[in-house]
Image 1 (spheres, rainbow over the protein chains, first blue to last red):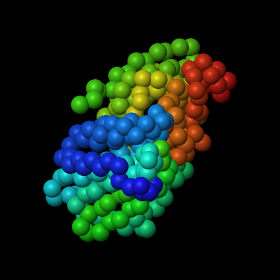
Image 2 (tube, rainbow over the protein chains, first blue to last red; image 1 turned 90 degrees about the vertical axis):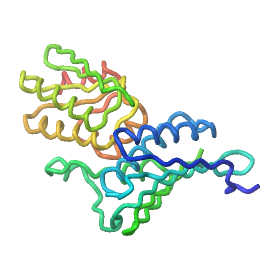
Image 3 (cartoon, rainbow over the protein chains, first blue to last red; image 1 turned 180 degrees about the vertical axis):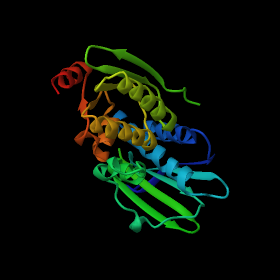
Length: 144
Length: 117
């Protein structure tokens, strides 16, 4: 076995709706606990999943109103890393054109939101965002 | 379904403390804002948000807290937070809230700092 073997993979499909992000975060917590991740790291994973789901709910305009998640535990003899994919089939956006939010700007702006990706990138070890008119996929990982 | 955020407000001499219990999402953020603005109407300029009962927030809820910070700054008031989980603390730092609102490990330290502000 090498360090990138798939030890466990769980898929979850959730309808967008009130607090669906909590259901997704519970699944993430369960998988992270199963790989004996520390409590603080589990909490960070949980928050990142919440934010990714909220982004999909708020912005995707997905016709199927569905978020597709997968939780993949990777490792060798022991679990090493948790890779989470959050995908929607919405309208997409241009990650490169997204302005990095700054608190100084938000304090004087009507629109205070827009923090999701910044939070995800700050809490997870690696984050990859791919988006097109067919939807958005966020792949994020956290080492144990 | 998670429970609706519960709030408890404690008024003291010179400052007020809002205790939260539960998930701070957009509705929870609105509840906190409503309580904070009521306190501002009463003349309180020092408000502490004690998040000891909150284990999870989302960025929409935090965005509403930014609105509260904006209003506090406008009246030369002070908002502080205490008893954050490590992740919420880290998230607040990622967002830069610590530049405009004090963040303290415990209530006693927060109250002392607000009293001196």
